[in-house]
Image (cartoon, rainbow, N blue to C red; front, side, top):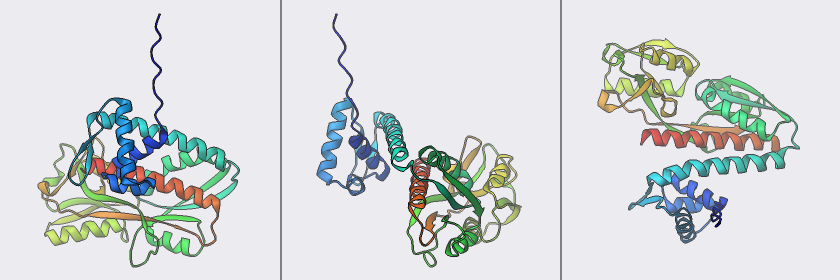
Length: 298
């Protein structure tokens, strides 16, 4: 009786390079991200395609896109890397103990934080995280005053020295099969005054000459999403929050584009390794959101 040949092991370095190419859409940018030469990246891709016996990329002039087999492998590669990184983070960082104060925005902070905190708790079980929600202006003031250890908020190039960690299209969302879009004045659901999303939305509507009324205002984006799902208003929201109950209302629907919003992360002066570890998880979490937003917006 013959035994089946053992399956090959997927090299995590190959998996990391593969994911980097998928995320950047470009071999050169991926090479920079994984600290390898472009020729080394090409060899790794050839090796990976030989291992799986399938073509993974469609090569185009300026970027590469995934084949259907590449899309399947991408899901497995991300799972393998996530498990690997969580395992080593836990063993390397389990000695950390203490408390860290994290400031997050009322809007997408609520959407992003649960998964980020879950992963951080798995790798740093002895660290307590106190989460403080608030608007960007408040978070920026509190981090500068040392009242919180880490803050995530909307990026302003005139006020923030640190680079953005996240960018995502801000789009109009409406209820699937809804009728609100045909109503005039157009009912819109917004965050409270001072929110960057609110400012971007009102500026776009005013420049487009669209007659609107602010039907709902809330400091939490879940309230905006609820108004959209109930077909009571349309709302400016990140593309990543879209679900089966909502549709993206584009220029084809008569609504103006708003562009992208950017987030940044700031740490308290004198912060230590616990704050650094949480910051890494935050950046990784928002990176995953960016990837989902790019796929949805493509």
